[in-house]
Structure formats: structure tokens, C-alpha cells
Length: 341
Ligand code: UDP
Ligand code: MG
Image (cartoon, rainbow, N blue to C red; front, side, top):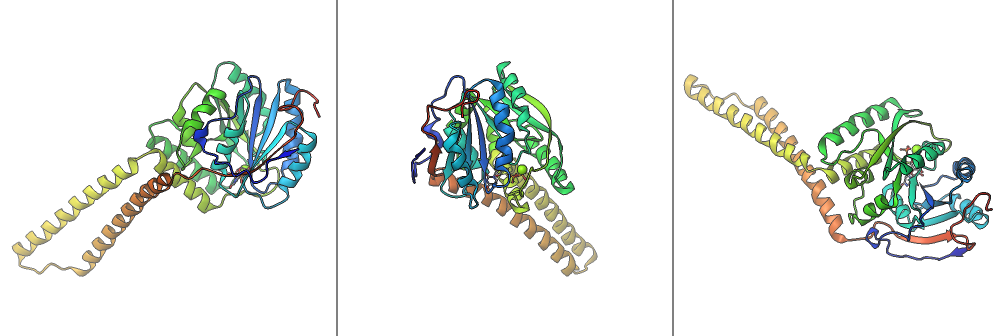
């Protein structure tokens, strides 16, 4: 077992990828506190990969777990050389953890999988099939989402449609991170230097021949979701402002329309005062207009702030994540063939 302790390597995506093995399949699994689900995940994944007959590695990315997940995997990695674990120095978020996984993957082809088995590993063979048929990206589209509430489903539906209207690169609806990518696609992704990593947008940005496969999204096998409503809202804002400047244009358009309306209203009051000699009856209408305008102004300033904040974060040039430790077996290379245990 080789443990490079506290290897705070600057894990910049720009550094490029690990050397690719021509025939190897890497399954990247980012996780945060998934001790209940990891054994179930491995027990479903390993027989499946072994049965395929091509070499594979399972690359776990620990996104700052505080439970026993890492200890559990560490024990498993001593006997199974196909398991590697990249431990990040703290919780950087799933988007960063996936970037870490892609940067450390050695495979000619990479599949990203959630640890909670909402993405059925049984679909991997058909994804590999599509890759062999020439696709660089095999995107998995959710036909159904069991175990998710009505509000989450409705908001996801509306959000994906809004996003694809906003951005120039087509972000396919109802696709998540469950996907296969060829080495060419992974290397292209790793070349994108931005710190604000909205992966759904980045996947779409690189383009490349893509095949879409529909699947039914299962419920979590165990444990709880790590996303709160606020996290999802944050991610949604990130998506919209990372991949489109259209909201800024909307703000300008709304500002122009409201200013015209306000000007017209003011003019009408002045004309009326001249014609009828009345004093403009004012307070309620004034209050209503002021509230409306201040609301629009604040919204627009907030929107500008989102973009400015993003520029600020990018300008600091910090790495996307830091690696604390890489746990892997010292047994020959990336392990793998059938029954190699
Ligand atoms: N995850 C992660 N870092 C985080 C949050 C989540 O690596 O900060 C992992 C999590 O362990 C799981 C995957 O991302 O493997 C999807 O998370 P989850 O199932 O909680 O999200 P949901 O499916 O509810 O959207
Ligand atoms: Mg999940």
C-alpha cells in the first residue's frame, strides 16, 4: 500500500491528465460521507466490471468525508489493486471532486458514477458499446426520477429547459453527471482552466460526438442526499451565470422598458396637472413606483454581483482542489483482469 501522505499537490486542471492506458476503463466515483452505501456500490460494481473482460480501475474521490468511508475503502484497497482513492484535503464540492477524478483517471475511457447507486452500474456495458461505436461522450438522460419529491422534479424540469435556452452550447435536458467520456473528451475537459466548474456546462461546451441513452433513475440505495435546497439554488445560479451573459441583457432590457413606462407615467401626470390644474395626487402611486424600481435595481445589482464575484474568484487563480493523500495498492499497475484479487 502506497500512501503519499499530505501530498498537497497543486491539482490544477491545466496540469493535464494522468497518462492514459490504451485499454483501461476508469470508473470515477466522487463521494462525501457514504459509508452506508459504498459496500453496496462495490458489491454491485465489481462483479459487473470483472464480467466484462476488459481491464478496469475504480477511482474513488473522497470529497472531505468525516465518517468511516475512507477507512473502509482503505482496507478494501489493500486486497484489491483495482481500487484507488484520491482524498481531497477538505470538502470542495462534487464538481471539484469530479475534476479531481478526471485528472487522476488513467483509463482510455472514463465513466462517472454517483456512489449512491442512483445511476445503475449495470448500464456501463451499453455505454462502453456506444463508445466503441464511435461516441466520445455517452450522456445518460433520466427518463424518470424515483425517490425525488414533486418540487425537486418540477424545478429540475423548469431549470434544464431555461438553461438550454440561455446558453449557446446545448446543455441536454435531464442529463446529470452520469456519463462516459473518451480520453479525448477527458483531456479536452481538463484543458478548461476555470475555477467555477459547472460541469454540466463544461461537458456541453467541449461538444464532440455524443450519444444519449435514456435510463430510469433509481432511488438512493442508502444514506441521505448531500444537497440542500440552498446548494441546488447555488448550483443553478452558477450554471446560469457561468454559461450565459443573457441575464445581463435581460436586465438591460427590463431596465429600458421600466424607464420608458416611468417616463411616460411622469409625463402624463405633468400634462394632467396643466390641463385640469389639479395637483398630482401622489403618495400611493409614488410608493408603488419606488418599490418597483428599487426592486428591479437591487435585482440587477445582484445579477451584476454574481458575474463580478465569478471574475473575482477566477482572478485569484487558486487550484480547484487540493489532494491530501492517494491510496493505492503497490501491486502491479492498475489492476484488473478477471478475478485478480
Ligand atoms: N458528493 C460529493 N461532494 C459533495 C456532495 C455530494 O462528492 O459535496 C457526492 C455524493 O457522495 C454522491 C454524489 O456526489 O456520490 C451525488 O450526491 P447526492 O446523491 O447527495 O445528490 P443527489 O443525487 O441527491 O442529487
Ligand atoms: Mg444521489
